[in-house]
Image: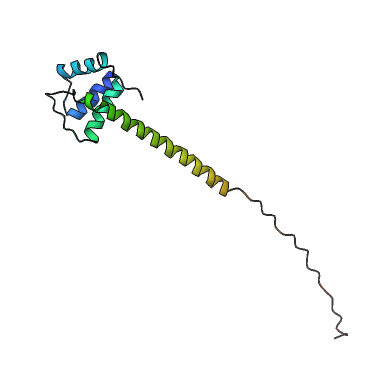
Length: 126
């Protein structure tokens, strides 16, 4: 999933519970992208990581500068989530394949019964 600047700004507004980002936050985003070499997805993940995992309470007057400090941990965290998701997907495929092997169709051929022959009894011999 590609994170655009617009999506990042909406996420920041959501996390900081503000209507629009201020000049400070715009400057912090520009600094992180140009000077520190982060992309918008890295910034978004770092913010989510700080909020959801560390329960960091962002204050609008201080902006999002703290996100830089969580960047490496956030990358590791999201890579681990990705690996776990892929592992579960592979395990699901293996499980589905094993279930399909168990459910192989077996053709059952009914036994042929010879028609019952009626015996004739001679009543005189009884």
